[in-house]
Length: 560
Image (cartoon, rainbow, N blue to C red; front, side):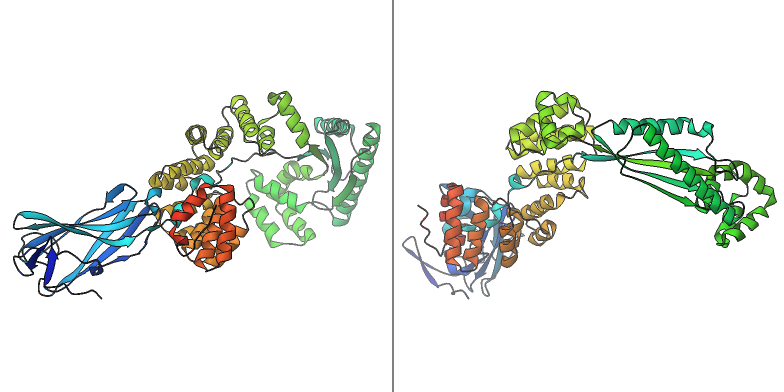
């Protein structure tokens, strides 16, 4: 694969014979291969491996060579960790290269990526130490340029997690009252109709009927008989209780002038065995387990009653404590409370933010895309409801989206102090950590946000910056974002990446730039040019990037 070293090498105008004790000859470029070449950004780094094949009768037995990879870009040079190799007669711990047989050397390379490195060259520098004398051999170029596509990953485009409001436009309320009956009777007693429960129900219905923000959806009556006595008798009792209760309710609604109440429905249950079982299970009756076993053993109502009556030791207690509670009619009203319209909420905030509750304020902030108005609303939440972490977290999301990352971090930390388990604030702190290339801090923060729906896109970016493309693709899932498409491009799933980019609702310059990269990687020149023009139109700085981007090395891009 590589040429053998010449026995005679011209160095500095002097002819030097190769052999033991002679100076080292200069290394030839074709002794080395670099994987990958050109270099590629992986996560935040530029890793590579340089492999050197040293030919026979080249490496002097009494010499050691320190090889330093040097990346040259612009007016800068950056050295990677040097590696030392030695001849057979050198005392040391470095890998030995045989003079007679030659050998293979492996030199790992890793640089922290900087945008200026995109146009660069990788060289190897050689420092020879031979019998205590040092001299330098000419450097050798082993790679040309860096494919920096992975560096397009950006935490700034990840949507921070909003702590959601619990605002409901329509809140359903239930009002209810029970009317109890004496054993074997269905008449409504005055004492029951004047009970606090019934009076409160009637008062609530009158109030709802007179309130334009409330709508009575329905009124339902369910009447019951206790499961003692014959089934036919209980059926007649329950039915009559239903009729009498319905008649009362109809008259009361008319008396109170409640005319809009949806539908009035009524039903009856001849024997309330279900209610009986619940009351017994919740009671302190000594033999309740025996009673419950009878209920489980017998399904026929009359058989059940006979068996329970046979439990003479507890039946009197049942008759006193349990059965009277099962002779009743329950009146239930369903009332919808209609909340403020979007227009009313906005007007109320403008007039007096304190007139709105916290859920209304948080919801109102979602009615606008204006970051200044969102900021004003969330600031009001933090002032009016300073113990609610959501105001601080959501204020931080606005600050994050507008690039005020220090203020955003302060808001997220305040939210965490108010609620240490709030996953939104934890995830958002992780995003700021990613912006600062603090992968360890981001990983810890995301771990505290486990289970949050929005976490997938943040984790995907973390994996991208850690260089784990497959994990990133899995974490992004069906996310339609530039970062998700980038992960798919790096995984060489170009069809899926194209679908992802096409699904982005508000494409930006990076969206079109990634689409141009897809065109370059799939040999579609028209796709390259049309998308690059759009990318540069949205962000003129993309033109300069494209000129230096090795993804487009085969294309003569005219972006003027």
